[in-house]
Length: 358
Image (cartoon, rainbow, N blue to C red):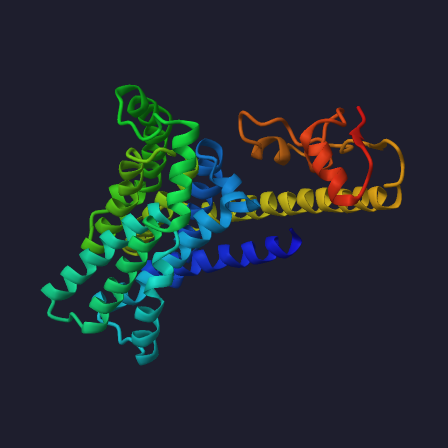
């Protein structure tokens, strides 16, 4: 987990760099854009769309956050071509070769990325700057996307869902209404909030509009998926954040009151909050290591009693899914030695029986 936290933090930095690169942000507008991204991801998305859960913890992060970030990186040369920037020869060879593998990443993000690639190719054709390597890069990505959809893993998942819930793929009024009210509307609301800079921007360019539409395509497409949950917020939000950052870049011609003071204040507040989160996570990790050491030293006991976490940080309570019990014991064990978590933990560490004390 500590190694994952380091890599995930690096991926977050790469995400910010990617958004800034796509938006072509100047140094002058770097700070307001950074503040807006933090607010949308961790305040709005984290509270309403469970984005914070899937961004900072292992479950779902590699699939949702990392794969979408890789696909945004894949779009950078296309956007640079439209801006008239010179593309390195190595990029022209590397990106088409990587297209298939990046296309195998994430189905929901693939829909938006394929849409953007088609739009960018059309715009390049209109400007008479369309190169064969751009077409080849789109084709390899599209093939990877198709492979992902029809892969053996997805087919196995389809069979499993059908065996558990045969009505999952039915486009019944009840299923669609439930998806619309509990997933579609919250995600679209979050996306529209994220797009506020673009909505009020007077200079909307085709690339900005394309990223905005690409983000909104995600909840629309997911209406036809058997598994449509709020975790899809992160996918659509990353695309609309590019459009929002492009709009923030347009603010360089305007003089707003408190333009320097308020972003600096918000940045300081977010920095302090993230520092406290890091401290709390470190404390949880240190406590878990101590408990693991205790289990290994006393695993020959007939019944190994594990004390609960002494103080549960507010962060831990907040990141739990609504229907999940709060994290209060090591590895989720309970005061029941026959609970399956207790059995799994006991077998893993070679203990006879493990129970959580109150």
